[in-house]
Length: 481
Ligand SMILES: Cc1cc2nc3c(=O)[nH]c(=O)nc-3n(C[C@H](O)[C@H](O)[C@H](O)COP(=O)(O)OP(=O)(O)OC[C@H]3O[C@@H](n4cnc5c(N)ncnc54)[C@H](O)[C@@H]3O)c2cc1C
Ligand SMILES: NC(=O)c1ccc[n+]([C@@H]2O[C@H](COP(=O)([O-])OP(=O)(O)OC[C@H]3O[C@@H](n4cnc5c(N)ncnc54)[C@H](O)[C@@H]3O)[C@@H](O)[C@H]2O)c1
Image (tube, rainbow, N blue to C red; front, side, top):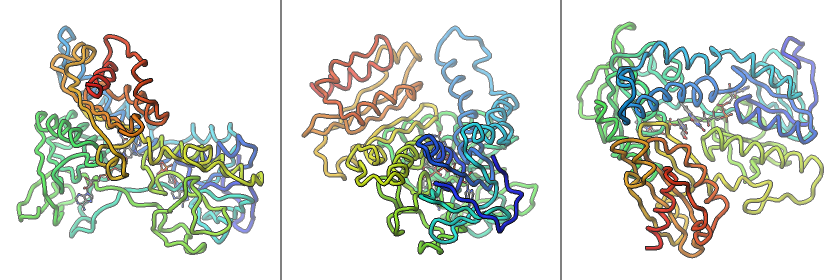
């Protein structure tokens, strides 16, 4: 394994050059390597990317104690301690362990053991199949360059924001103290998860949502149940609210937000959870005819079609197909296979629907778990998405509280499930579950959706009694009438 300290003029040749060692870049390099191609990976920050240090892992480490406490509170007989406040210091310490204290030695060792060369530094395209690295060698790709540079938090252009020291997902997931008052701008996944975590840690949370619902990309009942729970926990949810200005007069003092109607609110910290921007602004995209700062549009094999020659791939967040770690890693497996097949000179790739070289699940079977309390999980299409895609659909709903396994799981279990059925083929197009402990149920839905299992066969897939999975039986019964 090689690190940077060599003359800039030196150039090295590999079959595949990967830009960005997040979960996706690591998987592209690993796949290429496993399929017999040499690979080098370039990383400007920490090997493991956003997911390991400022996103999935730390956020879920902050949220796991929230779910454990909530579960304990819903069954009688557990020690009283389950009812007390979270021990912030212990929660942060466990989160710190999950991020390896923001050190990547372990992941660098893994690259080494996998036989993937590593260069630390900022990489940029310098024309077709060429990559330069700040202070490092020039890298030439024989077959492919894969851009896996991910995304960063997008901040709105608001007066005062730049100097108000706002939190983005990075500051929220790596916080070492609990703010007394936390304002959260946004109503998407980061907003609801971080509101849930910090509320449980003791912050007084105000959510400033510009629309009229949370989790707008899920079935509407998901956002409704999560909002209900946050409000019951004491959060102040403000709907149809815009933030016009942000000021922190004293660098050590509170932050003041001016809202659309002129009202001002004060908080100790403000988290902007307002979506993501592609990390492509300083990547040399102009050297291959692409627009710097843009999301990279790809075909189903993750090839950037606007660039001639079939050598440039964009995989993971940066292609904006599905901003999730597992989905990016899936794309990496597909793209890795496509890169290897093209390198072997395979005349025709298997790019048809569900083919070996097509990331079909990106549009048909994306799973996602939002780790709030209650959890909200979905796979495949919502009713609205299915209708928009032209399917003739029927959706059936079930109250999860009526499922024996759910009532055993928690006293007063509150939750709901929906199955979206394609009426012409009688297969499941999508499913959504909202309730405590449903995250682990989701893969059953992903399998049903991706495998397009006919409902007549699903009828024979008997869920164990008394588990929450019996919701499947209730959904099928509701559909059959
Ligand atoms: C708070 C939060 C929580 C999340 N939770 C989940 C979750 O629970 N489950 C889930 O599936 N998804 C979750 N996500 C989404 C998930 O983090 C991303 O989908 C995932 O990290 C994308 O992986 P990636 O490899 O494409 O990009 P990244 O993880 O962003 O990695 C890209 C890497 O490229 C490097 N890089 C960028 N530019 C260059 C350059 N020019 N040269 C060299 N290196 C460069 C970066 O430093 C970075 O290490 C969460 C996101 C956030 C913000
Ligand atoms: N558990 C998980 O799977 C998980 C957890 C966190 C994040 N993620 C992924 O990370 C990605 C980013 O999450 P996110 O929550 O930042 O984005 P998002 O797109 O889910 O939500 C952004 C929210 O900000 C609002 N918004 C945007 N611009 C605004 C503005 N100027 N003023 C006020 N509100 C504004 C939007 O209306 C929306 O409610 C998501 O696509 C998600 O898939 C996944």
